[in-house]
Length: 576
Image (cartoon, rainbow, N blue to C red):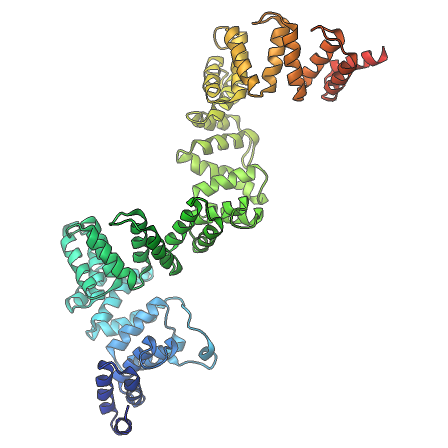
């Protein structure tokens, strides 16, 4: 700015403003600002508005939201509809406060600009003045306030009318607001008009409109579907910094859904979206890092944490799991349960089931136990059979609920439709008549299903029923086969049963050598009755091998299990 410009400005503020506008429009904001400031200090409303804009945008002067807000406030009081509209928008977004409008205090001069709470009351007053004065931007802002403000302020019909006036004046925000208003009114019949209004707003460069028009173009809503064009639109909105567009573009590149597959570029866009606050992008980045080969749990934890701290339930659950397992972070049971609890109390059913399982194991806080049954029931009622099984166990054991065998039977029956453990537990209930009428035939059928599912206890229980004919015909041969299968898999009770069968000749030829072999196998695994029998065999040489010293040892071990006969026989052997 020349000395002549400055002198002219002091003498004639209106001329200073005209010269400032010329300089600003020719791309010389640094020269324009001092002249604008002269006019603004002289009380010219348009100059005050322009100075406020310069401070907000950092044009010709270092950016300052506080100074920008103060100058807009001065212009708004003088009746500048443009200032009123812009200041209303700042109030709505939490970027302006009444204190800043009145003028900065010495304290706030040294504070960084921070995002505050929206002030819809102040915003509505200013937007109404601007709208009634004919400001298309003010009309759009007022429409937004009447649509998205607090409940008592909302008036969809009035909002629609203001959006129509704003759109008719060519305001991009008004066009977008009108399109959304038509959509909220259930405007399937207005689909073409909605798409046209969004397109016009997108053509004006409004990032949100570009993003929405990309969605319309991708899915053929009111316009011809065109995946390549949609990709270009998403990229245009993404490059303007819109996180939702960055996320969608990144996901499309990773999946190849809109064109060429480019996971590297896709992840780069996802990271930009996540760092800009898109929670879903942060969560999916965590998921991708977990699925890498090899996984990068440390990187996954970083993204999960960002999403979890923003309230993403699944991310909180995933982060809790990392802490519980020590993957990517130091193992911390307390921190892990804290994040799982956060997800569970927010309604994440998978986390609720996780927390309930931890509570059953005694992990977590005392209060968690009271929630166990409720968490399992929520998941079970949605069809989760594992949760139904665990809820049945809660009623069996009285964890978080009073013991109730009837309720236990009901939930275990539901879980038995697909959970082998539940089939076994429900079969036991039917066999013993706990909570339901005893039904040996049905019990045998459920034991058979559980046995086929690999449950060793079910194989043994079914073998016992086949052996004694309970619930159906006797079949000693089939019983022995089941015992042998379970014993080979390590079931100690089946080993003892085979020893007893070989010893007695029930279902098998008497074979004392085989009997001693199975008693010995079960005894080595700690089976008290098998230890008693092995002690007897070795004491009497029933299988041809007599070993009093080893007999004393096994009888002593059996006695330690509280078996009275073993205690008596051990005493008799040692006294002799």
